[in-house]
Image (cartoon, rainbow, N blue to C red):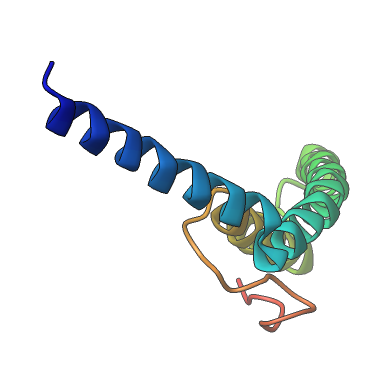
Length: 107
């Protein structure tokens, strides 16, 4: 490898090193990380609530033969909210879910 290529490679590594260092020091990245931790907890609570709605509506169907319309609506809202959280956590959206940057999604 020639000296010119070696110096180009070293320069490239130095630039990459600064990018990583900038990323590690980025306040925006760490703030998002904190929001992500919060929404991981919220997602687990929402999942438990969703399972409760599913189980309750199943029992209602078992005894009445018809699902409860209010529980169906709640289930749709829970599903939409959970999807919103997953989009944020997976970097598919920069909009923070309810109650920060958006309203509670409707069914």
